[in-house]
Structures are given as C-alpha cells and as structure tokens.
Length: 211
Image 1 (tube, rainbow, N blue to C red):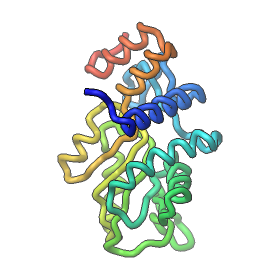
Image 2 (tube, rainbow, N blue to C red):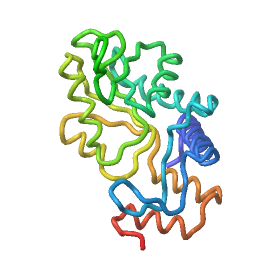
Image 3 (tube, rainbow, N blue to C red):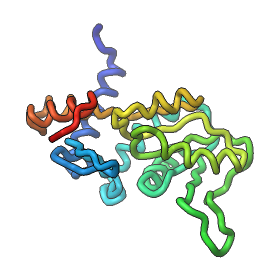
C-alpha cells in the first residue's frame, strides 16, 4: 500500500530523530551490561538530551503530535530523564506540567509531586523509555492517590520487552514515539551499524542471550 504524504512526512521525521539520537550517542550499539546482569547489544541513554536543545526540541515535537490525540489536562514528567523532555513539551504544547520525586523531601512541604494540579484532572505521564513497565506503576500509584486520573503514558522509545502490552493488561495505554525495531531498521538502512550488530539486536529481542 502506497504511503500518504502525511505518513511519509511522519516516517521521515522519525528517521531524522533516530539518526540524530545515534549521532549524539543517546543510542549506542556494542556490548552493555544491564541492571539485570544480562548483556545487551544496544544501550539507550537519554539523560543528556538537555545538553542538545535542537534534538530535545525535535523530541518534544514528536511527543506533541501524539498528545494531540489524547484527552488530557496536564502532563507529568517522570524523574529524572523525562523532566527536561516534559518541560520542553509543556513549552511547545502550552499545557501545565508537574513532576514526581523519587522520594519525598524530609523537610519543607515533604511533597512527592511538584507543581499545580487538581484532583480529577486527567494527566499524561511522559518518560524516556519503557522496558517491562514496572517503573511506570511505581509512579502511577502516588499520582492516583492524589486524585489524578491516569490513562496514558508516552515514551520516546519502546525497548521491545513487552511493556506497552503489560500496561494495557492493567488498564493503561502506552504510546511509543519510536520502537527499537524502527531504530535497528533505520540505522541498518543508513549503514550506521553492521550486519553483525543487526543480527545480535534481533537475536536479543527474540530472547537469545549474547555470549
């Protein structure tokens, strides 16, 4: 089926972003030890996006396109990587933003949530990546305790570990701007990674452990 102009433009925008993220080192291919102890053929590090304002603006623009199709009153930045992303989105999108803390302060207001919000407002969570989705539920709980309605999360990249499906099974939607499969395909097409790296990444996603 032939792509429409809109689909072609969207595809081109994603491709440019993937190449940009690879160029600045936010997407790396090689051998990396994960928190679980497994060896991964790729690594995603988006913590320094705030040091690349042009790339950050490009990321915010893609998030905004997804936000246009989601009913919401406010956006939530998940610490720490997603806070500058959410800030950029709020500035472009004109929506209020709040962010959560990993732990409450032991002084002052002792808040877990910073920013202005009201109970029963519908909030969209903003994060950098999703793996199995476990960390998302840790953030959802305090937000819902404060009366916010959480139905949707937007992430920049889906690592391909079933996170969106797990969230869906618990009644939450997860929208990924790009997937690891799109990353592999784009970098392979533009000869930024070797065929060996492509095979290792595909094997890893299918459950095979690297040696």
